[in-house]
Image 1 (cartoon, rainbow, N blue to C red):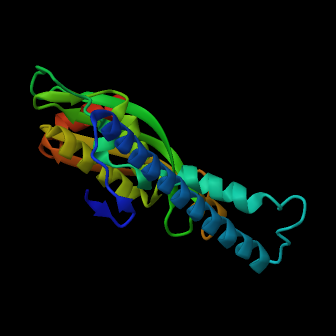
Image 2 (cartoon, rainbow, N blue to C red):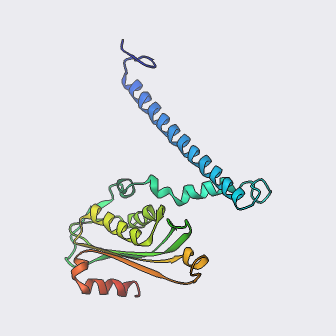
Length: 224
Protein backbone atom coordinates (compact mmCIF):
# COMPACT_ATOMS: atom_id res chain seq x y z
CA UNK A 1 0.00 0.00 0.00
CA UNK A 2 1.42 3.39 -0.97
CA UNK A 3 1.63 6.17 1.53
CA UNK A 4 1.35 9.96 1.53
CA UNK A 5 2.63 12.54 4.04
CA UNK A 6 -0.83 12.23 5.61
CA UNK A 7 -0.72 8.46 5.96
CA UNK A 8 -1.54 5.37 3.87
CA UNK A 9 -3.31 5.96 0.55
CA UNK A 10 -6.21 3.51 0.18
CA UNK A 11 -7.25 2.13 -3.20
CA UNK A 12 -10.15 4.19 -4.51
CA UNK A 13 -13.33 2.50 -5.64
CA UNK A 14 -15.82 4.51 -7.70
CA UNK A 15 -17.61 5.51 -4.53
CA UNK A 16 -14.37 6.47 -2.89
CA UNK A 17 -13.29 8.45 -5.96
CA UNK A 18 -16.49 10.50 -5.73
CA UNK A 19 -16.08 11.03 -2.01
CA UNK A 20 -12.41 11.92 -2.51
CA UNK A 21 -13.28 14.48 -5.22
CA UNK A 22 -16.10 15.94 -3.16
CA UNK A 23 -13.79 16.15 -0.17
CA UNK A 24 -11.20 18.05 -2.15
CA UNK A 25 -13.91 20.33 -3.50
CA UNK A 26 -15.01 21.01 0.06
CA UNK A 27 -11.42 21.72 1.06
CA UNK A 28 -10.97 24.16 -1.83
CA UNK A 29 -14.22 25.92 -0.98
CA UNK A 30 -13.23 26.14 2.67
CA UNK A 31 -9.83 27.55 1.69
CA UNK A 32 -11.51 30.16 -0.51
CA UNK A 33 -13.84 31.15 2.31
CA UNK A 34 -10.91 31.42 4.71
CA UNK A 35 -8.97 33.59 2.27
CA UNK A 36 -12.00 35.83 1.79
CA UNK A 37 -12.45 36.16 5.54
CA UNK A 38 -8.78 37.04 5.87
CA UNK A 39 -9.09 39.77 3.25
CA UNK A 40 -12.13 41.18 5.03
CA UNK A 41 -10.31 41.29 8.32
CA UNK A 42 -7.42 43.09 6.65
CA UNK A 43 -9.69 45.72 5.11
CA UNK A 44 -11.60 46.18 8.36
CA UNK A 45 -8.34 46.69 10.26
CA UNK A 46 -7.17 49.25 7.70
CA UNK A 47 -10.47 51.14 7.88
CA UNK A 48 -10.19 51.22 11.65
CA UNK A 49 -6.73 52.78 11.32
CA UNK A 50 -8.10 55.39 8.91
CA UNK A 51 -10.84 56.33 11.37
CA UNK A 52 -8.27 56.80 14.11
CA UNK A 53 -5.98 58.79 11.78
CA UNK A 54 -8.73 61.30 10.92
CA UNK A 55 -9.48 61.85 14.59
CA UNK A 56 -12.48 59.57 15.08
CA UNK A 57 -13.23 56.96 17.69
CA UNK A 58 -13.92 53.67 15.87
CA UNK A 59 -15.53 52.25 18.99
CA UNK A 60 -18.30 54.84 19.35
CA UNK A 61 -21.87 53.76 18.66
CA UNK A 62 -22.15 55.05 15.11
CA UNK A 63 -18.79 53.68 13.99
CA UNK A 64 -18.49 50.42 15.92
CA UNK A 65 -19.57 48.31 12.93
CA UNK A 66 -18.24 50.58 10.18
CA UNK A 67 -14.93 48.77 9.49
CA UNK A 68 -16.77 45.48 8.91
CA UNK A 69 -19.44 47.17 6.80
CA UNK A 70 -16.81 48.82 4.62
CA UNK A 71 -15.01 45.49 4.24
CA UNK A 72 -18.23 43.83 3.06
CA UNK A 73 -18.90 46.72 0.68
CA UNK A 74 -15.44 46.41 -0.84
CA UNK A 75 -16.08 42.71 -1.28
CA UNK A 76 -19.00 43.65 -3.53
CA UNK A 77 -17.33 46.58 -5.26
CA UNK A 78 -14.21 44.57 -6.13
CA UNK A 79 -15.83 41.25 -7.02
CA UNK A 80 -14.59 41.69 -10.59
CA UNK A 81 -11.11 40.61 -9.51
CA UNK A 82 -12.47 37.14 -8.76
CA UNK A 83 -13.99 36.74 -12.25
CA UNK A 84 -12.54 35.92 -15.64
CA UNK A 85 -13.95 36.06 -19.15
CA UNK A 86 -14.45 32.30 -19.57
CA UNK A 87 -16.41 32.09 -16.31
CA UNK A 88 -18.60 35.07 -17.16
CA UNK A 89 -19.43 33.96 -20.72
CA UNK A 90 -19.82 30.33 -19.62
CA UNK A 91 -20.07 29.01 -23.16
CA UNK A 92 -23.07 31.16 -24.14
CA UNK A 93 -21.94 31.57 -27.76
CA UNK A 94 -24.29 30.78 -30.61
CA UNK A 95 -23.78 30.30 -34.34
CA UNK A 96 -25.89 32.65 -36.42
CA UNK A 97 -26.28 33.81 -40.01
CA UNK A 98 -26.25 37.60 -39.88
CA UNK A 99 -25.88 40.03 -42.77
CA UNK A 100 -22.52 41.71 -43.03
CA UNK A 101 -22.45 45.29 -41.70
CA UNK A 102 -25.54 44.66 -39.54
CA UNK A 103 -24.85 45.24 -35.90
CA UNK A 104 -26.09 44.05 -32.53
CA UNK A 105 -26.45 46.78 -29.89
CA UNK A 106 -26.92 46.55 -26.14
CA UNK A 107 -27.39 50.06 -24.81
CA UNK A 108 -27.96 51.78 -21.50
CA UNK A 109 -26.05 49.30 -19.33
CA UNK A 110 -25.67 50.89 -15.87
CA UNK A 111 -22.39 50.40 -14.04
CA UNK A 112 -20.66 51.50 -10.84
CA UNK A 113 -16.90 51.58 -10.42
CA UNK A 114 -14.22 53.06 -8.16
CA UNK A 115 -11.61 55.46 -9.50
CA UNK A 116 -8.14 54.12 -8.85
CA UNK A 117 -6.74 57.58 -8.16
CA UNK A 118 -8.90 58.51 -5.17
CA UNK A 119 -11.03 55.39 -4.62
CA UNK A 120 -14.18 57.46 -5.11
CA UNK A 121 -17.13 56.13 -7.13
CA UNK A 122 -17.88 56.92 -10.72
CA UNK A 123 -21.15 55.78 -12.24
CA UNK A 124 -22.76 55.85 -15.64
CA UNK A 125 -23.91 53.79 -18.58
CA UNK A 126 -22.17 51.69 -21.19
CA UNK A 127 -23.32 51.10 -24.76
CA UNK A 128 -21.93 48.12 -26.65
CA UNK A 129 -22.31 47.23 -30.33
CA UNK A 130 -20.74 44.56 -32.50
CA UNK A 131 -21.01 43.23 -36.03
CA UNK A 132 -21.02 39.40 -35.85
CA UNK A 133 -18.79 37.34 -38.07
CA UNK A 134 -20.53 33.99 -37.49
CA UNK A 135 -21.69 33.91 -33.86
CA UNK A 136 -23.31 35.98 -31.15
CA UNK A 137 -23.09 36.01 -27.36
CA UNK A 138 -26.02 35.62 -24.96
CA UNK A 139 -27.62 38.96 -24.17
CA UNK A 140 -27.05 38.82 -20.41
CA UNK A 141 -23.33 38.22 -20.88
CA UNK A 142 -22.59 41.73 -22.16
CA UNK A 143 -23.76 43.50 -18.96
CA UNK A 144 -21.87 40.84 -16.98
CA UNK A 145 -18.69 41.64 -18.93
CA UNK A 146 -19.19 45.34 -18.22
CA UNK A 147 -19.62 44.61 -14.50
CA UNK A 148 -16.60 42.30 -14.40
CA UNK A 149 -14.31 45.15 -15.42
CA UNK A 150 -16.23 47.93 -13.65
CA UNK A 151 -16.01 46.19 -10.27
CA UNK A 152 -12.30 46.78 -10.01
CA UNK A 153 -10.21 49.87 -9.38
CA UNK A 154 -10.50 51.62 -12.72
CA UNK A 155 -10.21 54.64 -14.90
CA UNK A 156 -12.97 55.12 -17.44
CA UNK A 157 -10.65 55.07 -20.43
CA UNK A 158 -9.28 51.62 -19.54
CA UNK A 159 -12.73 50.29 -18.65
CA UNK A 160 -13.88 51.19 -22.16
CA UNK A 161 -11.01 49.47 -23.94
CA UNK A 162 -11.16 46.37 -21.72
CA UNK A 163 -14.83 45.81 -22.60
CA UNK A 164 -14.07 46.19 -26.31
CA UNK A 165 -11.04 43.88 -26.17
CA UNK A 166 -13.00 41.23 -24.24
CA UNK A 167 -15.79 41.11 -26.81
CA UNK A 168 -13.28 40.97 -29.61
CA UNK A 169 -11.52 38.04 -27.93
CA UNK A 170 -14.74 36.13 -27.24
CA UNK A 171 -16.55 36.65 -30.55
CA UNK A 172 -13.92 37.41 -33.20
CA UNK A 173 -16.50 39.78 -34.72
CA UNK A 174 -16.11 41.97 -37.77
CA UNK A 175 -16.14 44.96 -35.45
CA UNK A 176 -16.84 46.20 -31.93
CA UNK A 177 -17.64 49.64 -30.58
CA UNK A 178 -18.08 50.63 -26.95
CA UNK A 179 -19.23 54.02 -25.69
CA UNK A 180 -19.08 54.68 -21.93
CA UNK A 181 -20.52 57.68 -20.11
CA UNK A 182 -19.50 58.45 -16.55
CA UNK A 183 -20.00 60.96 -13.76
CA UNK A 184 -17.03 61.07 -11.39
CA UNK A 185 -17.20 61.83 -7.69
CA UNK A 186 -13.56 62.90 -7.68
CA UNK A 187 -14.49 65.84 -9.92
CA UNK A 188 -17.61 66.72 -7.91
CA UNK A 189 -16.31 66.33 -4.34
CA UNK A 190 -12.70 67.46 -4.52
CA UNK A 191 -10.32 69.38 -6.76
CA UNK A 192 -12.33 71.23 -9.36
CA UNK A 193 -15.60 70.50 -7.50
CA UNK A 194 -17.83 70.55 -10.57
CA UNK A 195 -21.01 68.48 -10.41
CA UNK A 196 -22.80 67.06 -13.42
CA UNK A 197 -19.71 66.73 -15.61
CA UNK A 198 -20.28 63.81 -18.00
CA UNK A 199 -17.23 62.09 -19.41
CA UNK A 200 -17.66 60.12 -22.65
CA UNK A 201 -15.12 57.58 -23.88
CA UNK A 202 -15.22 55.25 -26.86
CA UNK A 203 -13.29 52.32 -28.28
CA UNK A 204 -13.58 51.10 -31.87
CA UNK A 205 -12.39 47.86 -33.35
CA UNK A 206 -12.58 46.42 -36.86
CA UNK A 207 -15.18 47.84 -39.24
CA UNK A 208 -16.25 50.52 -36.76
CA UNK A 209 -12.93 52.25 -37.37
CA UNK A 210 -13.49 52.53 -41.11
CA UNK A 211 -17.29 52.67 -41.48
CA UNK A 212 -18.63 56.03 -40.37
CA UNK A 213 -22.17 54.93 -41.19
CA UNK A 214 -22.01 52.20 -38.54
CA UNK A 215 -20.66 54.65 -35.98
CA UNK A 216 -23.38 57.17 -36.79
CA UNK A 217 -26.06 54.48 -36.51
CA UNK A 218 -24.82 53.56 -33.04
CA UNK A 219 -24.78 57.21 -31.97
CA UNK A 220 -28.37 57.59 -33.18
CA UNK A 221 -29.44 54.49 -31.27
CA UNK A 222 -27.97 55.77 -28.01
CA UNK A 223 -29.26 59.31 -28.55
CA UNK A 224 -25.96 61.09 -29.10
